[in-house]
Amino acid sequence: MPDKTTLIEEMNIRSREVFRRVVEGYLETGTPVGSRTLTRTMSEQVSAATIRNVMQDLEYLGLLGSPHISAGRVPTQLGLRMFVDGLLEVSDLAGEDRQRLDETVGGNDPDVASTLDRIGAALSGVTRGASLVLTPKHETAPIKHIEFVSLARDRALVVLVFADGHVENRIFTPPLGQTPSSMREAANFVNALAEGRTLAELHMAVALEIRKRRQEIDVLARELVEGGLATWVGEGESTERLIVRGAGNLLGDPDGEADLDRIRSLFDDLERKRDIAEFLELTQQGEGVRIFIGSENKLFSLSGSSLVVSPYMNADRKIIGAVGVIGPTRLNYGRIVPIVDYTAQLVGKLIADRT
Image (cartoon, rainbow, N blue to C red; front, side, top):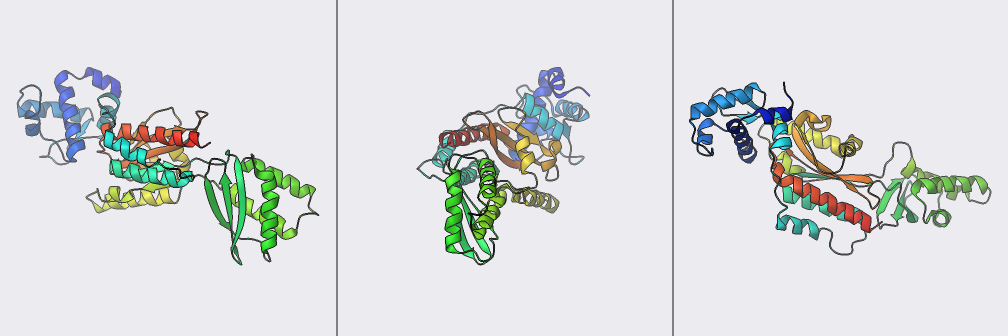
C-alpha cells in the first residue's frame, strides 16, 4: 500500500473532499458520517450513490471503516493519521484560551511546582481533556538550602530548596536516637557544602567530607545526612513528577464499559509513574508538537486514546520536560495543537526565568 503522503497526492479532488468531510464530521460528532449527510455539504452537487462509491474506495484503501453494515463511515487510525499529517488545518489560539493560561503564571509565587500544577489544571479546563505536565528533574539545578525536620520517632522530612525557587520534600526513616541538636548539626554540615552545587555534586562532596572528618562528625548527624540524601539520589529515585489533571474529562467520554476500564488502566499506570520516562522520550525527536493516535505508541495503545504532546526547554534550549493532552481519538486536533504548543512555550519561559 502506498504511504500516507502518496495516498493524499493520488486522491482526486472529490475523493479528498469526501475523506476530509467524513473525518471532520466524525471529529465533531463522534458518530459515523453517511452519504446523505455529505450530499448537503459537498462543494459540488453529487448523488448519494456517487459518494458511497467514493467511500467504498476509501474503505478499500484502509482510510475509512464502517461500524455496521448500514451505517455511515468513520476514519480508521490510518485515516486519522493521514488527515493529521496532510489535511489538518490548525486554528489560531483563541484569545480567551491564551488569557486563561497566562493567568496561571501571574503573581509572584516562588514555588514552580505549584505553578505547574495550576497550568496543568488550566490546560485540562481549556481543552476539556486530561492534561499531563512532566516537571523537570532538578538533579542539575543548583541547591540553595536543605533542612531536616523530625516528624515522629521513625519519620523525618528532608526539605530541599533549589535556587530557582523549586521546593521538594521527601519523608525518610532517620537513625534511632536522633535529637534536635543532631538535626541542626546535620543541616549545618550539609548547607556549608550545598550552595551552588547540584544534588549529585553535593552528594559527592558530602561523602568526601564524611570520609575526611569521620571522627569529627557526630554518628547520628552522619547517619541522618547519609539517609536523607539517599532519598534523593538513591537507586531508582527521581525528582521528576507527572502532574495529571482532568482525568474525569476523559473517563466521562467513553460509552462502553470496556473503554472505561482501559482508560482507568491508563491513568493507573500514569499515576504509578511506570511510563514517565517514555512519556518524555516521545518528545525527543525534535521541537514542536507531536500527535500520537491510538496504538502508535504503546503507552496509549490499550486505552485507544490520542496524545498531543510538546516538549519544553530551559534557557540552554535543553529539553527538560513535556506538556500534553490526552483525549479520545476524535480530539479536535486543530484546536488542541496550538493550545499545547503555547502551553509548552509558557512553561519553558517560566523555567528559564526562574533559573
